Image 1 (cartoon, rainbow, N blue to C red):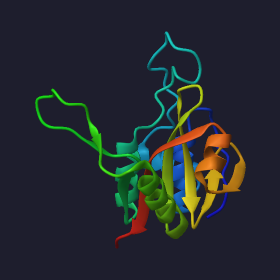
Image 2: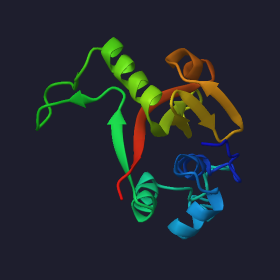
Image 3: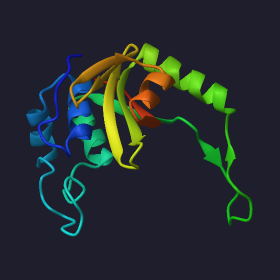
Image 4: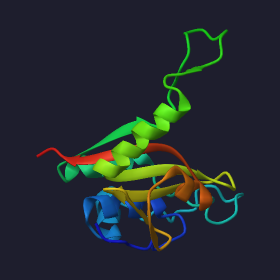
Length: 162
């Protein structure tokens, strides 16, 4: 994997998927059919006003290139139908972070994060290295991500299927 810088402020997901697939971001734009620049929410500031990309578009682009993108939640919760009870975590927090870290150390894909400002951000990973489309690389750890204002939510493990 090689580091690519996102071409637009709204392109972190597209650029991260492109890095995981080892293709240029413009190629992913072609596969998806747009570059995310359309202003869809004119009442919001840049870059939130832009269309951006949906993970489903990325999953379909992966499939078109012969890859599967499998989601893994960092902290999955379960709840009974009909409400009435608060959601319960599937794993204790320390187990969830350990399992997540093992997947990042052993594979390749994309991590979805919330930022300290409450926005979404995506980074690519391969064998324990984070490739941030903002132009930086670093070794993965919970502390390394959170120290950069990235609070991991889920990863998408990307593997060749054909």
